[in-house]
Length: 359
Image 1 (spheres, rainbow, N blue to C red):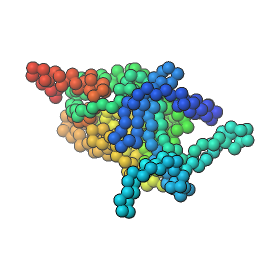
Image 2: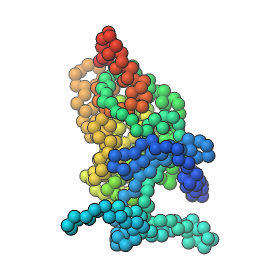
Image 3: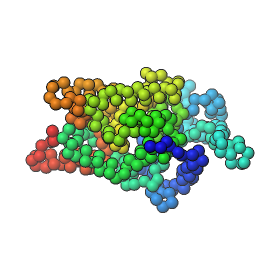
Image 4: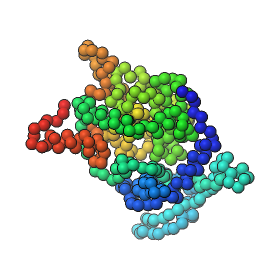
């Protein structure tokens, strides 16, 4: 495969087009609002096509220039109460510091375009979005489910195949082949050079790319034969160890203020997309649902579980793998896993008692 060929001019034009979309967003309704009030998901439209806007409050900067000016530069301040030495308030705004975007002069003077040095919000846009995106990002109930080897084989694997056949991985292949998000890739092995060990790393969508203790990277492998942790077998143990070492090494070289024992690596089951990838996060990253029980599975734990498989002398022990184990996790009630797999199985088990749970 050829090396990525995106030019700086093309990447800059892509940024300008993306930035021009946000002001055209027309709000329709709120889909979700997290309990802490730090993230809200909005449904709307851009140029008549449905769009999702996910707005997070950005982490507070720790720069001395910002913090020194913060108390005196709040745009509004309202006291909510006071008692003895304690007072509490609602406030908005903070100091605005101008920064220049290198090489993007808007006045013809080559000095660059001004932007705020410290952002208040982290915004994600999905446009045009589909009904599946809207379901995924809407507030919904959750269910704890148990996926046996048989349920995986008979019901879940076909769902994965259908998902891949619909072209839902095209955006991943665009990244791997260097057609999109080239400027976001912080590390990659030369495309096609390392075979099964080829990979790249880029920031997770929700990382602000500034706060080191909130670091969240994705390690996406080039190989396409692994869809999820279910495809991992004992013969993959050396590959997993090597990939772990390479991703940790790439991270600490890119961010020298981080040491190896400040990182943890995990995979999701079920992942958002069925192309094997590894999450690399700072140990101080605030745990969320994506790191919790029922979603995240530690990479070291997977390796250890694979090492404990086989040894019975029957058949090829190297081919035994994660497709033989029972996995417990949570699913959203609007997800295809619930509506197409586990809800029908539940109804079947509870309708007259004629059907027993799959083993």
